Length: 358
Image (cartoon, rainbow, N blue to C red):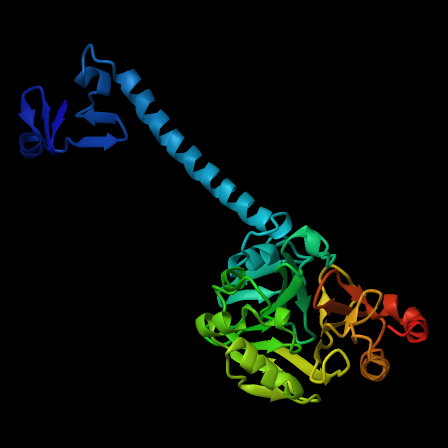
């Protein structure tokens, strides 16, 4: 039986002739096994190397399956590497959702329902430690109402500024992302938010190392630029952008399920602001319930630089004691540079900072 185009010949008969002559007979082809009126493939091909042909076809199929599996595994490994190891690899929404889906058992992870993802509290495969030398970091949070948030931390520029991105991945086709300090390396920030819709870009204070990428990120990704009212003029003039919302302290910035409380904390600059996310449990640390983004107002080991001004130092210490350390010890601190800390770790040193004067 030879195949030329779609015409089969069996012992001199075409497939059309076979069909017209057979009464209940049939021609069946499954892979490379053919039967014609009870004849096996070897009977149809006397003396041919049918076994070799069959094995060759099976080998080709097997190699195709192996190629698909290897491609899938390599893709997963590359994505996982971007979460945990690579210092420069971009992160995206698929990476974050991959993290949430990794532990899809009854005790954690994210289950998929007919109506889309149903979030549960996911254990993070690697604990978030807040250290900038460990590459781009991702953290999962859970709000009391069940909303799942993602936090990305990225260190950029020569001064190792921290860029933070908060995401509510449950919201689609609407703003679901906030950027805090578009400090530098606009391309990396834009790669990070490629799959998100940016609703706000908040600059914590006027110093240029915190807004070098603001103009480009705002132009490409959108989102309303925001800053403390007393620093707006310097940021707008320096970055060449229009600040769409001036922050005074006491208001809330809401994008999707993300609600950030604005706290005015003068001292490092007159218009410095901190941003507080309340009641968000961290997936990797059961004790953390609050998260505060402090810009250059608070770092591990002390307040931000007040440039030798006694008045500015008194102002920043007042901001810290009255407005920041009024929060509980289980508040995680995300500073504008370097590693994270907690209020519980820093509180015992308040008097030490006061006594030394910086």
